[in-house]
Image (cartoon, rainbow, N blue to C red; front, side):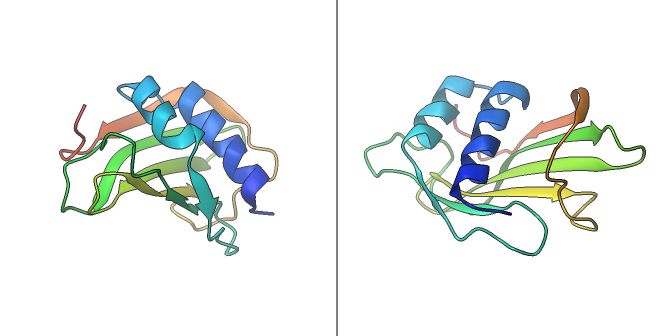
Length: 127
């Protein structure tokens, strides 16, 4: 079930495993962020509200993916995709967690194999 507890688990996973270019800056965004709007379609996506006192992580006045990390799952042929979006404020606003491009529900017990096979930082990321 996608809920606040699950979102906090994902935030920890992202900070520990996703190879974000500056994990400390992302940690400052996510440590005190409020999470809400937990998608129930089978993905584990959720909305993020970062304090206005936090320094922007992306160029303002844009909305889009600032970071993506993809992992192979232990179950053969399946992947886990993590996308971090910023909003017009330059703050993290949404985290999307999908399995095989949202073609399958995210497993309750996620078993990734090794490091991410794909990591990409968006052009609006301001680090």
